[in-house]
Structure formats: structure tokens, C-alpha cells
Image (cartoon, rainbow, N blue to C red; front, top):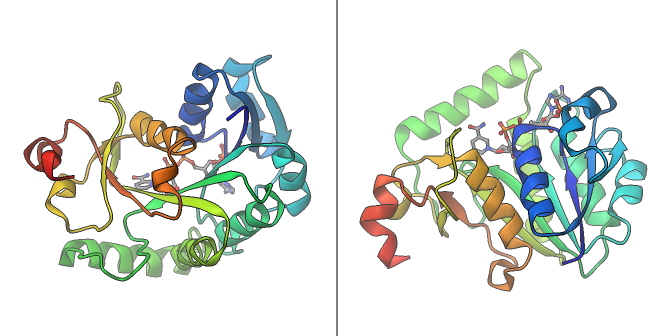
Length: 229
Ligand SMILES: NC(=O)c1ccc[n+]([C@@H]2O[C@H](COP(=O)([O-])OP(=O)(O)OC[C@H]3O[C@@H](n4cnc5c(N)ncnc54)[C@H](OP(=O)(O)O)[C@@H]3O)[C@@H](O)[C@H]2O)c1
């Protein structure tokens, strides 16, 4: 891994990923909306910024050229297929041998084997419905984005985040293939560690074509069941 691109670099997860990537000595390119470039001021002189919409194929083509890895924050803002457009642009323009790591939440299922609580399912259904009604978020489009990634023959990993909190790192999160596994029960990860898992995945070939659901390393369920992972 020499050069990596962070798509959605100015968000909270994106900035943590930029920091982890720079710490590893990677050359970093970041994509973010023009209005958000000032949010990356702390990295001035240490990264290249390509301003623009993350679903603009031309912006992504320029940003991912030559990159060995691409870290993409999939967010379903608005009702204009932003998430699937972003995923598609990365799938189309990244080098065929590049490591592609995408972020999403536990609500994404790869094989339908995840076991969700009733509360979780109700929450996702409500967010999908209300989000669309007020034209704020399009959860269905994040589902579509991940379907396209799962169906691609690229070297992808889709990291499924639990509920998030801020705070100092607890180390690399634990993961499981399926939501509902006891190790994940705490449903809480530090955002800084979500980013750590994304960056570590770039060089972990055992995660190629996996959709790990993650949980904080020091969460109660990880401490109780972690040895089984
Ligand atoms: N939040 C949670 O509790 C949670 C839980 C599980 C998984 N996740 C996953 O974690 C990842 C990061 O989520 P996050 O909540 O922590 O958010 P985040 O890191 O703050 O990222 C939000 C991203 O959305 C962009 N954005 C915001 N408003 C936008 C708009 N109107 N149009 C276009 N882009 C816009 C931001 O760009 P700007 O800097 O330009 O605004 C930023 O890149 C996502 O993949 C999410 O599915 C989150």
C-alpha cells in the first residue's frame, strides 16, 4: 500500500481515516465537497484534495488514479442516488487490482443470514420511510450501493459499523460475519476505531470479499465472547 484515496474525506469517519493513513506513511488523496475543503485544514500540505461530489465519475476518476487502495464512506444523503452513484464511480474507475473498502451500517445484509432485533428492524424501517418522506436520506440507495459492490469482481470489503460513539481508541474492533452473533451484542464502536478497521482492511487479504460487522474491542459483548471470534 503506497497511495490511498479517501472518498468522503471531510466527514468524521473520513478525517479519522486520513489520520490513520498518514500515520502509516501512505500518500493520501481525499475527495470532498468544495464547501467542505476547510474541514481538512489540519492536513494541509500532507494530503492532496480533489474537491467535488463523490458521485461525479470524473472527480473520482482523477482522485483514484494510481491508488493502491480506496476507502469510501457510503452515505445516503438526499434522494438522488448519492450512495450508489459514489460506489459505482469507485467500482468503475479504481484500478482493477486496487483494494476497495466501503463503510456502511449493520442494516446492510450480504447473505440474508443476519438476525436483527425487532427494535432494530423497526428503527431501520422508520428511518427509511421518514428519510424518504422529508427527502433527507435514502437508505434504500445505500442498500443498492452495497449490492453493486457485492456483485462486483473487484477486491472489495464492506465494513458494517455498529452504533458509534466518540472517544479515544480502544484498538482494532472485533468482527463477525453476521449481526445477531453474541460477540456483537453491545452494538457500540468508537468512530476512531471504525476508521482504524477500514484502514487495516486495506492490507488484510482475509477480508477480501467479506462484509464484517464490527464492535468495539472493549465493549461488554466483545470482552465476554471475543475468544470465539
Ligand atoms: N452515524 C452512525 O451512528 C453510524 C452507525 C453505523 C454506521 N455508520 C456508517 O458510518 C459512515 C460514516 O457515517 P457518519 O454518520 O459517521 O458520518 P460522517 O463520517 O460525518 O460522514 C458524513 C459524510 O456525508 C457527507 N455529507 C453530509 N451532508 C451531505 C450532503 N448534503 N450532500 C452530500 N454529502 C453530504 C459529509 O461530507 P461533508 O464533510 O462535505 O459534509 C461526509 O463525507 C457511513 O457509511 C455510515 O453508514 C454510521
